[in-house]
Length: 391
Image 1: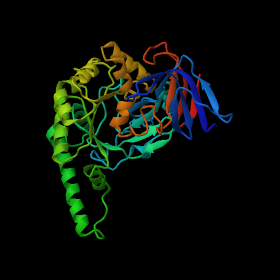
Image 2: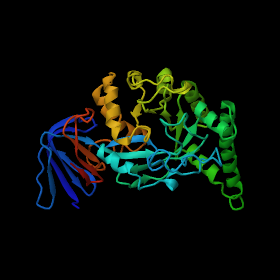
Image 3: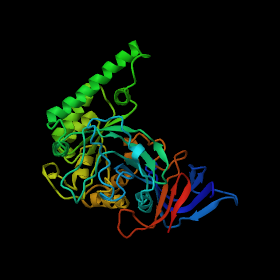
Image 4: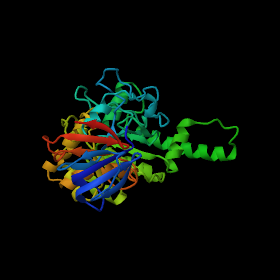
């Protein structure tokens, strides 16, 4: 394993920075990081050299909303992304149930995806009538697709909508109305604030409450609030509740009707991890699913990333989804950004992934053509400066 790799004579380097696209440049990788980006780099004999003449270099792609490691194959192990014994469970961590041997990590690499975020809850199944989701299913994690965990507890998922109501009703759980769901979350927040005050007064005698401490991590800015909702009204309702408790770091998951409330999202500075855009319009919550929505979000200056919601759409098809958006009118550069730097920003990790610049993690993918075109092939992939794929 070489600690130094030189990618030389790269046809086009898509930096995803203000430098834009560099032509006939070379990139030096040392100790897992991008060291230099120049037209000519002189190196010694103790380095692996990869000739990239005529090829295209991108930062490794990022899918910021998946269930990789939670559902290795559809329903093979049953339903284990949702804990039915507790419908409000902010202390559950997806990392504690993650299968790092999930073959999807390898599939991701073959698609040029080098970082994913994995979440509790269920995906959109083509074989089931609904999503399975509780009110607060737990905490997400961020993982490199070389299986290196980089953030164990990243954010807490809060869900609202018909899919939550239906699941709770089918399982004979409560509450079963939107009012009841919001009241449950508000009660949770208030209990956390009361718990904080009691801990200040009587820290030694008060037993620790892991649920409430997880919520305090959110309220005090250490975790992100992920709003899992499809309709515009449900998104607004959950955001309004979070703002009541001064939660600033909010991200929308799915956001099927995000284009209907684009002005609201822009004013609140709330990004959307949108998708999957390739799915059937099944049920009331998906009736406005539209592959043109990324274009509308772009035109409305709403920040967004694209997702496969794996295994809804297999992870290796993330570039295909970006290509579909281009076909609907999204500028090609914005499509690249939606699977590189923008998900990195949304995850708060753009200081290390999502672009090509000195000091960033050497997560790099080399294609023989435009990765958004179906006839383009991945030639090389590096994660943390190590070559993990070579065609």
